[in-house]
Image 1 (cartoon, rainbow, N blue to C red):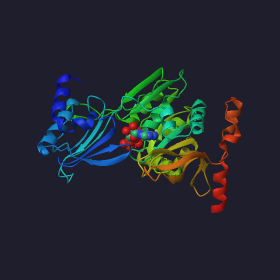
Image 2: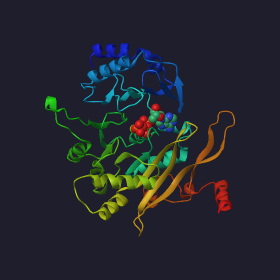
Image 3: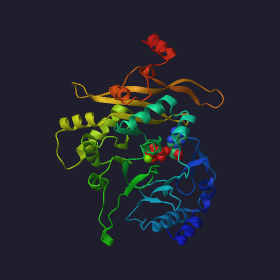
Image 4: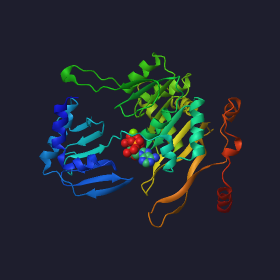
Length: 377
Ligand SMILES: Nc1ncnc2c1ncn2[C@@H]1O[C@H](COP(=O)(O)OP(=O)(O)OP(=O)(O)O)[C@@H](O)[C@H]1O
Ligand SMILES: [Mg+2]
């Protein structure tokens, strides 16, 4: 990217420069020129920063649009773009946005969180992290599920970086965000159509189909949100074990339902019952990310999907889950821990056969939890 654009963007973004420079700020939300909020440490605060007027805010967004070869105007009132430093920007113009031009900037962090960071933050227990490592080693298909901003991409990045070094990964994203640390990685990014320049669209789906012909060991789809779900499910069911992706859902069983709905969106007509069976057998491990009211982002569940029952419901078994045990009176932060749920995964034999150090006893919940459950029953 040319420095001219960076400089232009820099001067237009002067009103929020301090927020962009503050490494503690993870997201900047602009609801019209005079109302700006930031997310810090997982919580959202209003700040004093303001743009002088609507035109200044629009000019800033136009400079960003221009730097990535896009247009932000009445004919193109929604913008998806990146700042030169990689931060992700989405903006919507009035009259669609009633507050004035509305923008969210997801700050790009140079230092990606690692599995040890997630353990340190209490987002994941040591045992659960070891278990996920084992799932990756064994080539289990893993879907990271969660709500908006719950930490899905971060988790996928962490999991992708644990894939054995000898394997060839193909990563497919709408906008390149993942920075998987591995030796043999191929990155693909989609392309939006621009009829004025004769540029055709290249979708996630197209890239999944290409990936299949590029000798992948594992395919990672950054965010599954369209008909590519069907291709990914087929990838997972046809021997490309250990593929991964994220999906927007509130719990592990919902993640399957969401994928099923996405599969049905496409023009390939497969009966819904057949799709459900395909999803049920493709899904193996679901890692559920959640953002809690205290601002903490935690892995709320690690679950196994073991197929569908007679009524057609997905059978989801929690292997680990985060349990709240209290609340810190001073900080208001939730206290709790991630515990095993007394469920031994169906692939335990694989763990034994491969001599992986994870004894059956590691799946047994702590005594206090079992006692609590008995009392509640
Ligand atoms: N376990 C965690 N602890 C603390 N911060 C986290 C954790 N996971 C993610 N974050 C931070 O939360 C923010 C959102 O994370 P991320 O982009 O991974 O979420 P997402 O679910 O992919 O969001 P989106 O739905 O917008 O794609 C980032 O700033 C990231 O650094
Ligand atoms: Mg994401």
